[in-house]
Amino acid sequence: MSTSPKPVKKVPIHLQSAQNRVYIKNGEIVNHDKSFKADVYIEDGVIKFVGPSSEITIPGGVRTIDASGLMIIPGGIDPHTHMQLPFGGAVAVDDFYHGTKAAVAGGTTMIIDFVLPNKHESMIEAYDKWRSWADPKVCCDYGLHVGITWWSKSVSEEIGILCKELGVNSFKTFMAYKGLYQLNDSDLLDVFERIRQLNGVAMVHAENGDIIAKNTQRLLAEGINGPEGHELSRPEEVEAEAVHRACVLAHQMKTPLFVSGLTSKSSAELVGRARRSGYCVFGETLASSLGRSMSGVPKGDRIYAITSPPIRESAETPRQLMKSLAYDDLQLTGSDNCTFNKEHKALGKGDFTKIPNGVNGVEDRMSLVWEKGVHAGLLDPCRFVAVTSTNAAKIFNIYPQKGRIAVGSDADIVIWNPNATRTISKDTHHHACDFNIFEGMTVHGVCEFVLVRGRICAERGNVRVAEGFGRFIPTPVRPPFVYDIIEGKVQSQPEEQHEEKHNGNVAKRFAELDIQIPVQEPISAMLAGNLAMPAEGSLCSTPSVRGRVDGHRDMQESSFSISEELDRSGVRACIKVKNPPGGKSSGFW
Ligand code: URQ
Ligand code: ZN
Image (cartoon, rainbow, N blue to C red; front, side, top):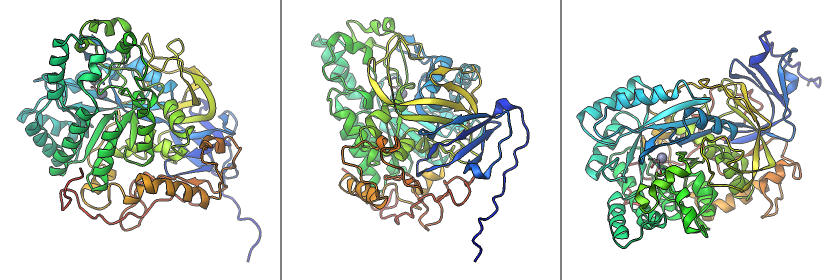
């Protein structure tokens, strides 16, 4: 048997102008399903090589970045932003330039924003308006969800055109904002049915708008008109009731449902139970709810943190929501970035219903999830990638173009320093807003470099974006990650993901990898070299990827396969569906 090493085929690199070629060496690549050491070569905005340096010859003139001790992760995808949204008598101050500059500064390289038509406004005219706002200004790629704020035959026809011709696959409905965006159950059923017919994804803002209206009337009549009235009008159960109802309505229509902006443990648990009952539902929580609570906030300062659903009072909520992300009761994080200046918020002095709703989050989401998740020992780095990038790419059907470090994927890349810290402040953030709801918070997890389609847009804190460099990214209908569940090919969440089994899984996984991490030792210490990453890399402890029921590679897995020896992705064969959607399940309450 030959003992001499196999001759290694060198990958020829054609000479190109240097500015669009970057080589990243000595880093730890972290995808949602595994992490491993490899170099990355980028050309023309696309990842052309992932592998050991021995397999590639880099000519001179290529920008080389030494990522020793750092992580190479897919750029964040924020599926929930409202740049320059006209709302509550004001216009959000983060326009598509400032908002995407802030996104890039924090390691997010794609946003998915919302077209929100006024009632009786054409969906397509509203879509064209948002495109005219965004296209000339975005510094990173973006997609669009479209809000269904009213319902009629013409709306039904227009969303068909949006799906078939205009690159939209997801539609937001509101159970709150009575008189503005809210739909009743009958319309929600029709909307969900139509979305299913189009192989789209239904989204919902789940709060009971009728209860909110009633409570608001009573609070104002009792003279409670300060910012504290906002959360009093919509306590957690007002969200949980709507979450439950939305899951049942969508399940009855066999429509996949994305519940956006969850703010409480009770709602997250409802989504987890629905998933374990076979419902095709995904849950998102937000930087604002993960990063802080309203506990101990003086009354006068509350006005600046008004958003809907609200940031909750309990200091326990951020950690509870992070655990829900760890257990896969929730699948991803957004920001709901919709920023207003102090003068706008003051419109609601004396009447909390007039405070424009919305806060910042798009710049700090990645660091907050790292700080409260990975550094706190609740998420492993792979799960961090899943909940900040990959799951959004899969749900909205742009994976693996987005959401993965792999040959052929867009070079949306963050070189992440897990142990560096930064202190969040309005004095240093890139938002257009004159305050920051995380002011003074010190967080672990900092971008050393951010590449947007191969262009270095942030380098060691220096942000150099190009207005209009971003592109609109169509989101095609029938995302396999979603519709394989609807069509009964995979289960939305295997039983063993749940909390009491999850902890066992994490301990078992670390034992298998022979990593003795003291329970309270944050995983990022492993990345800091105190605990060596196993040579073969590590598999995600809470896999968010689901293989096909026949055990073959998940169709979602990158078709740009990294050279075989590196790509031993731990795709899991899935468990056969027990209760197909709309089938025998008897509810999940
Ligand atoms: O409710 C939303 O998501 C939009 C209208 C922004 N406002 C907010 O409070 N998040
Ligand atoms: Zn929103």
